[in-house]
Amino acid sequence: MDIAAAALICLAGGVVAGLIGVGGGIVFVPAMTVLLSKGQVEAQATSLLMIALVSIVGTWRQAGYGNVSLRDAAWIGLLSPVGVLVGVLLSNAVSERALRIGFALLALYMAWRLLKRVFGPEAPAEVAERATPP
Amino acid sequence: MIGTAAGAFSGLFGVGGGTVIVPMLIAFFAFGERLATGTSLAAIVVIAIFAAAMQGGFYGNVDIGTGLILAVPAILGVVAGTAIQQRIPEKTVSLVFAVLLIVVAMEMIFG
Image (cartoon, rainbow over all chains, first blue to last red; front, side, top):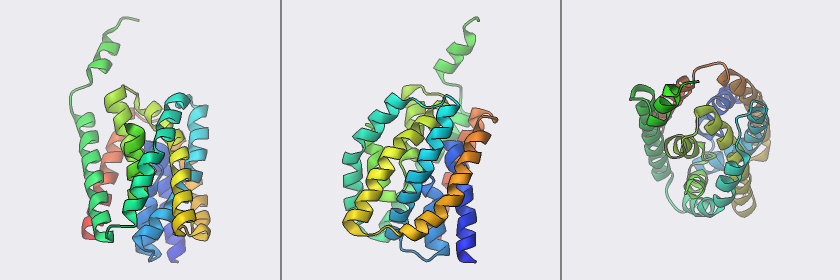
């Protein structure tokens, strides 16, 4: 039953990944720690495998809709291994509690940024674009 | 800058880095939300494969069986999610993202 519930949550996680352009780990990790009693590090590592598969299919679909800048994606992806190396080493060196607090702070900061975009004034570029006559 | 920051968060938190890439592309590089999310997914392909190889190869932390089983519904979900995204206003995407982030943060702190 727990694996079925985790599968349902991961289905929702995949929908979220497609909707907002994340890998889905933000949903996959809690599904594994809470329902499958996995440790934080194992859940995070396993979610990376899922993220790789989900992002390949997601990219294929978004490319079909014309929503992928491959050049920018390549730059971001290829420059990230330096940061990945630092992050992986840290995740094996600090406590699970510290990881959870760090994850929570990251999530709250990003939420604030997005809420500002939704409810704040429009960005100058958007306003200028709309003001330009056709 | 985005690549390094996203990579560090990916290794640390088991997320693909999209929580960093998408807001940065929109805020600092004037990407529209759909283009930002699609480009983020493409970057995550590279980031997640590298990070999964590190965790699996060096530390043996990847549960491949569980990962593959749970990936099946997740892949079905991403196909649906990308399709839905084309049919809703872009700012709705930001709102959904913000609410999800707050819920997860609460679970991480108090769960």
